[in-house]
Amino acid sequence: MPQISLPDLTSLMERVFLASNVAPDTARIVAEALARAEADGISSHGVARVPPYAEQAKNGKVDGHATPLVTRTAAAAIDVDSRIGYAFPAIRKGMEAAFGIIEETGVVAIGFRDSHHFGVAGHHVEDAAERGYVALAFSNTPAAIAPWGGSVALYGTNPIAFASPRDAGKSPLVIDLSVSSVARGKVVMADKRGEAIPADWALDADGTPTTDPKAALKGSMAPLGGTSAGAKGAALGLMVELLCGALTGSNFGYQGTSFFEPTGAPPKVGHLILMINPKAFGGNRNGGFVARSETMFTEILKQDGTRLPGDSRLHRRATAAAEGIQLPQDLFDDLQSRIS
Image (cartoon, rainbow, N blue to C red; front, side, top):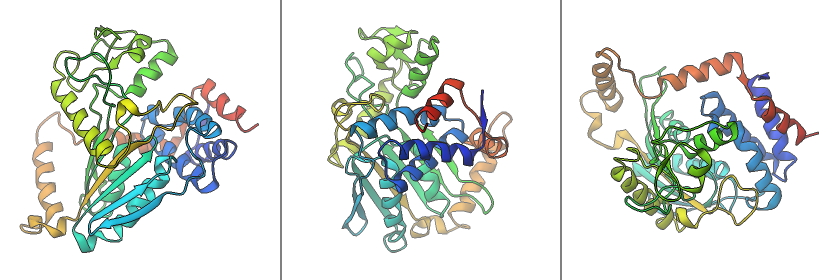
């Protein structure tokens, strides 16, 4: 498989987007986000997204020239109209606005409407934690999970992420999960490779657990907890739908269109990011929030076999920065063909 450095990979993806009716600033921002996902080993949200992203821009399913509209609607509330563009430029602008007011307000909620694929949710909250803030992020996605006891998908896989700052020199603690047993992108990747999937990942159109990724893609993902104990995962899926669909005025999962299909109406999903300034709360006592947090982390790591969430991600990130990324030959050839 071809080996490519992160800067060269980012440049290659940027050139693909520029050739696909995407504005220069947006092409760069989206390429950087996908390279960051690939570096962290989250391939389902990395380079594999370039072909569908590019095709959708060509066909107008996503507007590669959209300029997000940011409005401060209340003292600690920011509304971002993504204008059916990619999520990453909208998120960048919304968070910049939030950083400008959080020292005044203590907390900020940023709602994003009429948006596209959220990318790696953990990256958005990590950026806030790097500045010393606690952050939570939510996004709904096109329908992939049925209500518990049902067989027709209504909720998305709906990522939830949390990040917390740490002592100087340490990367933030990041927790990133979806309300499905696994991310739907993993089923898509298994289908492309012709591989079976574990029986607790998904259900077919009749609501029966399946190991066939094609049947899974026609059916629904198992909620967090798997095919036998997913009631709580399904409830979380509904929670995120209300926070990101109803609260922002965006589509619910069952109304949104695929992030993978090249044509059709824009997905118009929603996101919500909450940021908290620890200095505004009682955590300033007893050494401050970060010091108190490190006390907990120390207790966790005293136990054999434990680790903090995200440790393996940081290792993969460092390896990618030093050695580059290996891409499947067919994917590399696909990217090259789009700029030749």
